[in-house]
Length: 503
Image 1 (cartoon, rainbow, N blue to C red):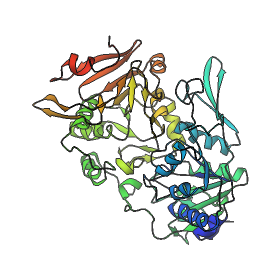
Image 2 (cartoon, helix red, strand yellow):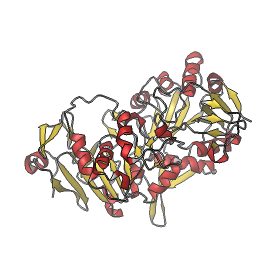
Image 3 (cartoon, rainbow, N blue to C red):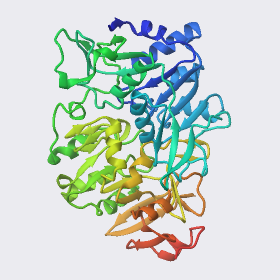
Image 4 (cartoon, rainbow, N blue to C red):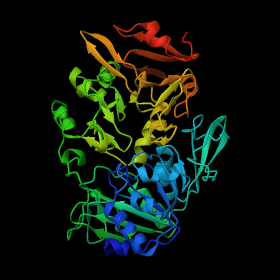
């Protein structure tokens, strides 16, 4: 039988050295009051310490003073396994300075691992991740020198290669819902996502662990069965926080309480912050040039995934083109229909038709359900490989990138030709480069492989690399120049700056 407790009482129940799983997608559906209570207990008592954190996605808000970052910075955590790190600045700093063990694996693999754990499996096989950094023959999923666990092995079955991932035993689940009814059933009316909530609760209860759920309200009425996300039989403690912890107001367009027609999508997109920082050069049109060109790859009937950053502009131009109503966008966190929310709200969906569990969405992606995707990239090499998760001195994490690109029919990478100082405008239909960036993004060798060009060629995928000055396409021999924009000199502004030769 579940028990209603205070945040501190819940935190007191977490033992030292526990494996604690957070059901969140970055800042979304993240139980902030539980994190705050853990931090307060640790600073007062020194416990719980040695925590091993697990999250399919990530569990931060780009702020070292929120969510788990304060107690990570204080020293309560010894290990993290997650798919995404850039939203957790304290975690990244701790990992890159060798203060904690840290591992990164594809988001879909970790989400499917949680579901597999719910059914009693101790390991999972997955094709996603073969041939990229998570494949031990290519690189490592460890972020630093002190992370020595071999989490992944390669297995061949009937001629196909898979990654075998050993699933950790999870002792405590931290989950955020909206309402608890008299039987302890949890519903998620005001949450934008369910993430892995049900599977995580099942996995933890199966091994005798503890499921702690933060909610906004107590209801004396029994929930409609179809609305229950976690049944009361899986819930141990409930923490009621009537005042919502998030700094942003609740948005009914993101929870599904109101539906947003395509004709009003621009209004709702503009309501949300599209960046975490003010752009240094507001006159630079690089992102818009890339987004406008990339959006021309859309066709009526396409099922689409649009990533964060520069790819966000694809949605804007799809709306301007009038094709938004004729395509269906999806988000790896579970949204189908509508349009991905930008910036710090990424993971939510504006006006979704459906919001499913994350593992279910990755079933669809891994099975080749996407017609086209638009993703960013940190750098790309001559062979068409793309690095989206690691650069010298930093680490963002792979997130859903590997799963999204695994079986999608057409992949469009939206990335500038170079960065750090690049300023480009469009004048009279011609591209004018006001200043070049000091750091190339297309180079002979890259720091890590998030996407394998060779794998894509083998699978027969169509791959484009759309920049502000040209478009490359992937061929069996690597990158090939497909298109040069009006106003650009091919030799001096494309071929000469590259440290590899184009065919």
